[in-house]
Length: 329
Length: 243
Image 1: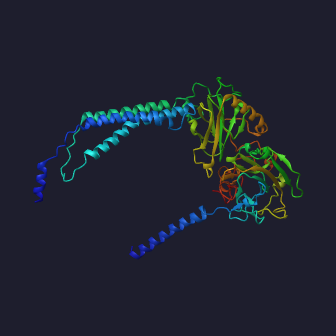
Image 2 (image 1 turned 60 degrees about the vertical axis):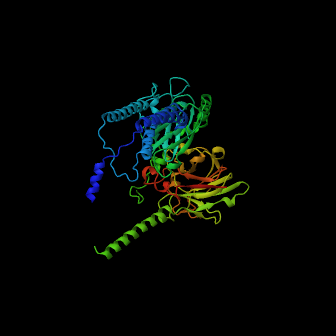
Image 3 (image 1 turned 135 degrees about the vertical axis):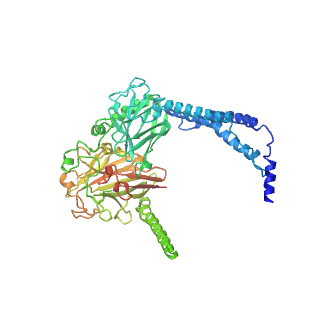
């Protein structure tokens, strides 16, 4: 009896699918939705995508995200459309015990798929590689010898800075558990807890650390660079709008890592010059006791005074107690 | 393995896991230093907060860790805690009795007084015999003079106050040995110390503000920043601003 039923099913063969012109309709709907979707992503959502356009590198990063989102939109729409279409029209009907149509290799579809995805991936690889360098290293830390610097030579020895001139504004970012400080070598080397930048001027961030690894992340400026002890990590950005921005540490650096944030400010060039000169004067007495400006610092070797030496404290590196201290980790 | 043996093993393993969780919860996460609440003691928009630094914490199970203590406004005793509460939009007059010895700052920047009234602190030194007259200080050079023992810093409010240390080698070698450093005994409250006073205003909005020391005083730990530098109740704490 069972054998008879099986034979009957085999005899029936695959149920023919009614020709509704699925491929044609799918293609038409996909093209229409993709055009709408891309327009929405690029024109409506795009301007609101992170990290904004507060600097040239941030704007470039936003464009990258818009491009990637725009390219992903037709793919996402195609997958969802095909999924929905299958649910609506190709699902198994009640009482239908037959197999679907047997699948055979379709060279045209396979070639289209392989070539299409290859083109997309390779194009994005080229685009992404270029965007890592344009503009100014994409705001990322490039190490002590940056590959791309917008044609401006790293001015390690500049002792002054003039807006709109060839010498780039240097700002040293120093991480320490658990605070950021900032030095301005072209303004006498004063150090402050306030990060202030001029609008429309390219800035070279020299990022380093006094202890463990931190990560300088000025999110809305599109700048992100690891702060490593003993290493000068260079990143570039040109702020394009005045206002405030957040600075955070993006490397888990200890118990108060979450509190290691700051608020920076971008102001007009004239306001910045006034602030820098005033701060230079205000902090003159502090600047005198700071170590000379350098690209990196080693607090374990300090020019300790007489009392420090008498007490055996010739380092600011911690670990002053006997190595046999029972609290050794 | 027999059924009873398997049951016993399972129960023992379960109890071990439960015990471990309870230990983590109650012995590591749970305990927080008590909060000295000064809110009720504010008068005319101002409140006085008193603290102390000590070279050790003999009343704790970490006797060789440096620590802060805060005076209990109700009892007048110094409690081993770094948490305190003050009202919002209130002038806070802080007094710190600094009983520890000097240590160079990792970054001399933190030798500058900021975020408090006049960006300066009032400093007196007790050398074991007499207390000096108050003098106003705005910057300490901890590398050249070894003049700082700890700092009281609330980075989010821009507050940084170095706690001066006794200035001579002899004084640094005759520090308090019992904490809290109270009384007149040369080994405790009578040991050399500094008196640091400063004033700042709390924010208008309630919230919790972490404060910390910027001297790498976690002896024996990496960069001097472990141990007491990372443990509530020692060299870091919280200022709770209440409505």
